[in-house]
Each structure stands twice: as C-alpha cells, then as structure tokens.
Image 1 (cartoon, one colour):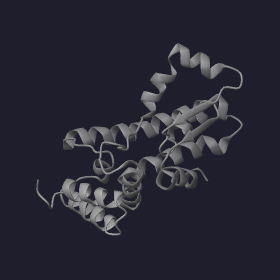
Image 2 (cartoon, one colour):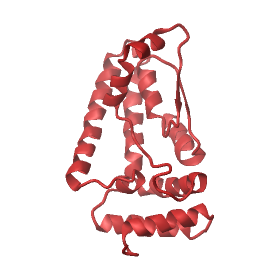
Image 3 (cartoon, one colour):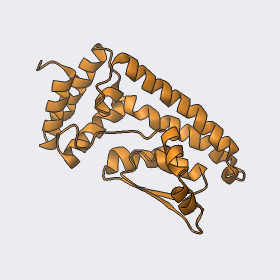
Image 4 (cartoon, one colour):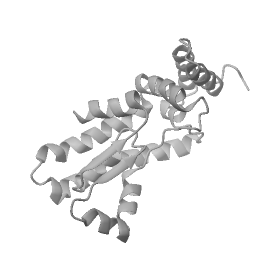
Length: 195
C-alpha cells in the first residue's frame, strides 16, 4: 500500500487515536487532505465508501431527493399541524445532519472518537445513513404500523448516530429516544442541531 494514500494515512491516524496519541488528529487531517486532492468527498472516508465516482454521485442525488421527500412528508403530516416550527425545523435539522459526514470539521473528531471507542478497524463502527425512503419502507410493514399506532407508543433507536431517524419518527407523530455510544460527535452534535 502507498504510505501517502488517503486510506493508509487515515488507517494509521485511527490506530494512533485508538492508542491515545496526540498525533492522531494530524494524521487523520493528512488523510483527509490526501483524499481531497484525489477529489474524494469526506463522506467517502467517514462512511468507508469505496464507491466509483458515479456511485457516489448517485448516493449524493439520493440525499438531495431525500430532502425534498422529507420536507413534503413534514408538510403533509397531520401530526405537525399544530407545530409549524417543526414542519420547517425537522427538514432543516435533517439537512444539517446530512451535511456533517462531508464536513472535515465533524469527520476528524468523529473518526478519533470512533477509534477510541471501538478500536482502529474502519469496519468496526463505520458511519452509515438510513435514507428516509428506506425508513418509510420499514415503517410501512403491517407489524410496525400496528406498533406505531398503539397507545403510548414510543420509538427507540439504538445506535442512533446523529438522530435523523428520530426526526422521521417525530414527523410521523411518534416520540423517539435515540442512544449512541459516541457521546461527543454523535449525541452532542445531534443535541446542538436539534436546538
């Protein structure tokens, strides 16, 4: 492997973060810069995406389409009729959350915290995103529809990441609690976005 490649620098930075080295974030930043020079989006490192440029472009277009779909869902949601600030606030929060995996200022501390928490293997806790369309497919299942309609129903998302699935549940009228082990980069950042 090329020691100057984005992946090699990134993996070495993760190993150093796991060991608590103060040099970790600098090496992760070098990996991010090497990726930028190759035209890679930061999301490619944070999500361990080894996608062709066409596949990454398709994924980006799905994220863009999701914004429109979720905004439409919020506009039509009967659960948000009395909460106009949520009708616009939930889509805005989703957009902010979706932008984070492409923001080096978020990706670098997230990567260091992930390595400290789960170890240096990039596949041990890779960041992933459940798109709104996929969430809608799951919650359309008859068993889920029944559970969501039960009196006092609440959603719980384990490994909730930045909390975007809780945004979906809130728009559908269901209180939601999300739990994640990454207190700073995930939970802390999600709380900032929600405010």
